[in-house]
Length: 260
Image 1 (cartoon, rainbow, N blue to C red):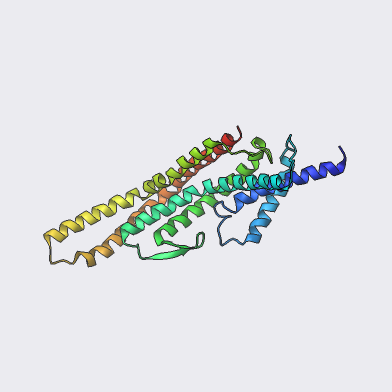
Image 2 (cartoon, rainbow, N blue to C red):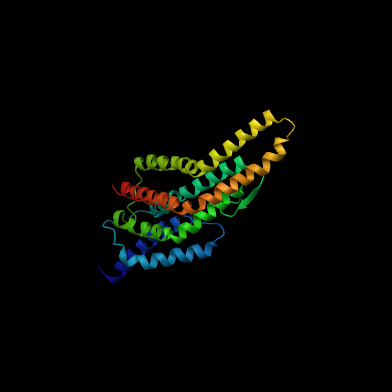
């Protein structure tokens, strides 16, 4: 095998590795945020690819076929990387769900801000929960795990040998259901507290009809919601770390599942 053929084969591997890593970086938490310029994402993806390339073995089967088949293989690699980044985003979607529920209960349904990640209006409490989760995510090196996971996936699924299995769709569906489960678990203390506040205001409205419960209840519910959020902040980090551990396990299972 001459040197030119070796260079060509490694260049094909380089492109396939870059495709998978780029797909992950453009969808993953923090790196995939729209506030991060596309050029910065590409530079990071290219740098990670160059560093990881010596650790990635050359696939036993060379990539062959016409340009259409090669483009389909590249699309599969990009899709798999995007799938990993998308799954990693589930826990942050859960933060938005929790924030929306709490904000609605507090009466903040009309107090919305623009989410830079999705360019849509979200509850101010949801955005607060999201940024708190993102700070903890970076503090516990969650982004390091994601980079390590996509690089180590090449040890199980060689570049160009990607083939999606039907069971991975069921696994992703199950993980997507956890978005609402996690969101409700995080929002539960505030939901219960605000429900009791609403119940108390309802009793007051029946016993003291002269009192304008709407005027009194609005600041009371806001104060109660903010107090319960503040009281839960010391426990938010450990709770989020627990959910992150589960997410990492699910992400590993997804890679192993597609490696079969």
